[in-house]
Image (cartoon, rainbow, N blue to C red; front, side, top):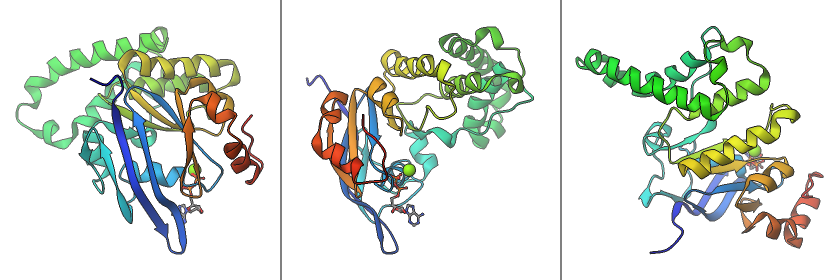
Length: 262
Ligand SMILES: Nc1ncnc2c1ncn2[C@@H]1O[C@H](COP(=O)(O)OP(=O)(O)O)[C@@H](O)[C@H]1O
Ligand SMILES: [Mg+2]
């Protein structure tokens, strides 16, 4: 038995927008349970690739394999049912409801109409509600928000709102999450704590995190593995140390709009 397992394989993906080839024969792999960063200069194709993996765009060529299953071209909903999701897929939060209620509404929404409208809904509702409350309380403890469970969400600070987002994410049974700039909007004083929670999610729950992030300090600190994209395909990959000292990576960045690696 091998010690590592691939959860996601991107195989020769190409995506064109008119004359622009946003993703160009891109292949990469993400290891199960890892925190993997996706970096690269502006226009490298990172966002487009995330959209393809999560089903929001159809590729012109290539395959996306999740847990050995071909998910290429499936709708975001179908891919979500395969336990992969993109951070913004959870519905907006509810400022006029309590923190606890905000978490409880996530599974409620995920259940969807079929179960919601079915005749046995009433029977299972109470039982599920209890399970969800336990789960929500556990999530709130995990992110250190249990004291604020009865506070209306609108009274949370900016940083606490970001924590609540993590809590809402924890209400869904997921294998893999694609995070788009998770550090954005987190006050510097809370940054380290916040990133610690993200890391713990992966460590303690085996959740695989694939993260696009511009802040190099963040990415270097929380990732096990970093994949570098340039011109629509993978330039290189390695540990933060390997990537940081790779001349090709430094050149890729210097050749762009002044983003820095170190
Ligand atoms: N919807 C779109 N229509 C046309 N061109 C697009 C679209 N989305 C992205 N592109 C182009 O594809 C390339 C890759 O963009 P993107 O995936 O956003 O890169 P990154 O996220 O790495 O900055 C860029 O040249 C961008 O202008
Ligand atoms: Mg982008």
